[in-house]
Amino acid sequence: MKQTPDLQHIQEKMKAGTLTLKGFLGDDTRTLSDIIAADELIVASRGLSHEQIAAKLADLTERGRDLMEGEVELDGRFRVSVRDDRGKLPSPWGDGRFEKGDTVLVELTTGRTWRWNQLTLHLVKNHGFYGGQGSDYRLDPQEMIALLGL
Amino acid sequence: MTEVFTSVFILTSISLVLVLLLLIAEYFFANYGECTIDINKGERVLKVQGGNSLLRTLSETKLFLPSGCGGRGSCGTCKCKVVSGVGQVLPTEIPYLNPTELKENVRLACQVKVKQNVQIEVPEELLSVKEFETVIEKYVPLTHDIRGLRFKLPEGETVKFKAGQFVNLVSEPYGDVTESTSRAYSISSAPSDNKALELIIRLVPNGIVTTYVFEHLKEGAKAKLIGPYGEFFLRDSDREIICIAGGSGLAPIRSIVLDMIDRGISNRKCTFFFGAVNVRDVYYVDEFKALEAKHPWFKFVPALSGKEEGHGFERGLITDVVARHYGTLDNHEAYLCGSPGMIGACVKVLTGKGLPENRVFYDKFS
Image (tube, rainbow over all chains, first blue to last red; front, side, top):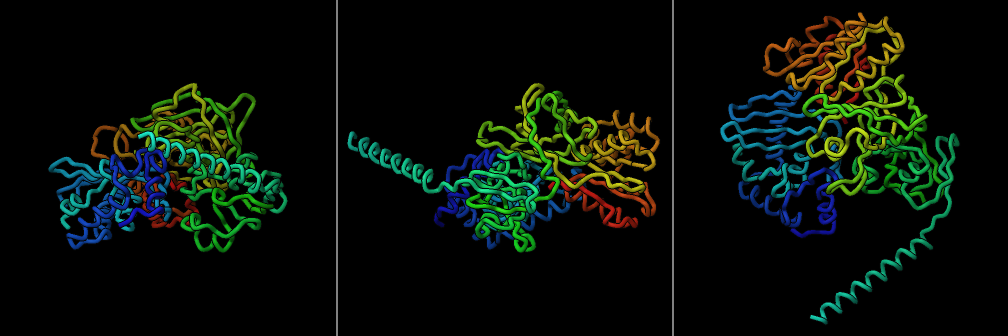
């Protein structure tokens, strides 16, 4: 995958302080094309699609969504809460605005935590972007596949 | 080594000269001169210098369209109908415009450049939107992640708004944030308190403006507000009122209740259901309980959905609590403020009890 001028422009918008306070890239120094390509390799090698991973995460959000920020234990494995925040987040790809409001997922046995919002899911599903290394919103596909039992 | 430095120096110099030439060329050849902007068929006609975006040009003449991203084309809120004088819709606008808007020549003002005379149409109420250079008079922690701020207007200035409306708070550049950014917050004070504006702001993870509020604002600091905006306000009728909110959604409801008191509206029963998870998330209880004690038509019902015991509030999701309180809703109006999920769940409960959907008014956090 090539780092096109378009991708370079998108990567600029992903920097901290542009669309969100901490941005989308964490401390990842790779190009956006390399980040996407590396994650694509993992997902494809397992015979999965980005849509499948995003759908599973969206399902967890939906199951915690009606509780108005209350926590819920799901499948005896996770604790999930969904925040109600005002406003929408723009996609760095310029293809829409997505509700803020993080879903926070805690794995009960390890205490490990992941967070995502509607924009994160859109980026996974439609652009194969799982966040840069070190980003608070990184959903490492290898971890996600194991965690979600895909 | 010297050769490398010389080459770099020559290349840099050539680039600088080219940039300079481009700037000079833009100054002389891309000078669009004076243009007029006709607003609402001659209701207001502005003479402006061409060359800037419509959003920026309008704001320089103190006409403020709503904008959440400071004109970067990433929020899609600065929409207005452009009747004539601009080119084709740009690819950067398309994701934010639905088919009806495209058909009706609605454009993003931040993406449209003023190069000639332009005719636009904007909602009437936007013509009274103003920019206020305020000073923070009070900064109060209301909960662990919610702050109450009172912004004092400049001496001699007043603000006119309807209870329930919102303003945009503009944050200045800080840290990695290199540009001013603005976000919408509902006004929590009463319209009669017109020499100041109060806002209730909850910290949003990774949020540019809320982090600015929490880490950079304090009493005595200056802050810019633009507004008022919004269609969420109390409708004139004699129906009983149901208000439902969670988190910082309490703000417009507080304004509405305080306004009812100021206007002497005592013939309409009003019940305010405030939903939270834990005791630490509840605030303004004393104030609302005091209002309840003083005004028999007002009732405050805080409810907690978490597992904590002994708090004395109602228990359960706010939707369940509302459902428990009412039978058939045949002469009611509802005013809701919260996330789309919360609004959706409340609308389902209310309409399920017979309340027509056109009597449910909401400020969806979006």
